Image (cartoon, rainbow, N blue to C red; front, side):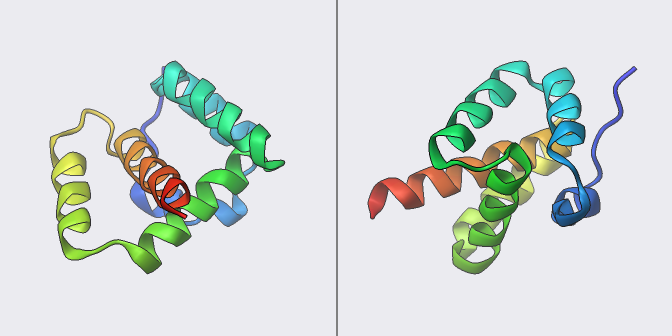
Length: 99
């Protein structure tokens, strides 16, 4: 049985191993896990590093509208943790593509 990741756990990914994150995400959203693993590998990062940087970028750079979109996604999601990972990593990828 899968367990939803709490938002606090997501924000404290500094203490989460890539294996633990990968295991959880592969159960919650296998397509997203594969996509993020590929993106992490392209950058020479672990999955946890990739998500951790995405969370940091989001917290530092997201505007009010982007935060509102995240909150709405969390509110409406079956698994808020997976929704959060998806939103913040998409934000990171968009930020990087704009550079």
